[in-house]
Length: 239
Image (cartoon, rainbow, N blue to C red; front, side):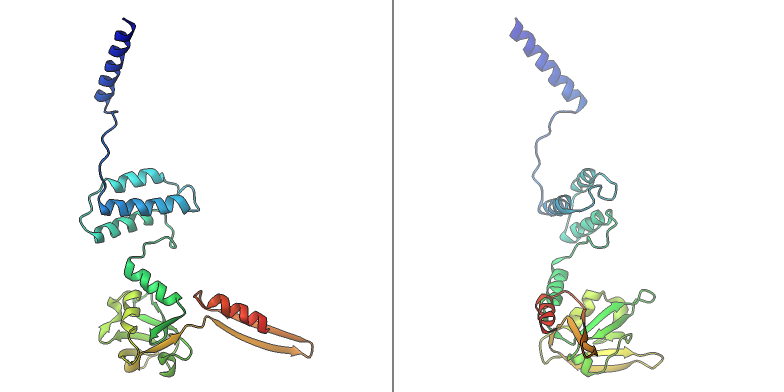
């Protein structure tokens, strides 16, 4: 009799759970796109410094994005960007494969191209020279900081992202690229550059003797790349 009562109670409880929608649904297989979203979520969940995740429930964020259907990798990337944007952190962002390869190139210590550090002018979105890299084709052509690159091989730079502009200027050694450059109030002019190997030396140094018994060494680290650690250590040793 006792077992029968327990069985009836168990069946009754199951009916109540079903009625309330609290039964455990069968696990559904995730698509490749959903797996990618989930992996990005896990990376942030495991390593992000702000444990409040910008004062939001990060688990609820996961559930919201995992319920979506993603028809393409581009749609998945858009969703990941949206998810990361909720953190309101400019240093946490998605780098698709082509942008990641570009980042690897710029931090490797050597590349083939014209040797320009560039930025986008926020006002009109025209490409602007930060500085030419010493010893590069751009430096030999006397390109200057604040020069405005209006076009690259005829492609208006207003229509290009920074990564796209950089990719247009990179290329095999010996090939050429034409930059349309504007300086101050002068009319834009075309400058033809021949791509070459550009060594990214991140360290600029100077040793000034203040007096007979005092010298001051200056080290400027312009970027972090594969050569930076060695160059700084070697400079300190020289000093």
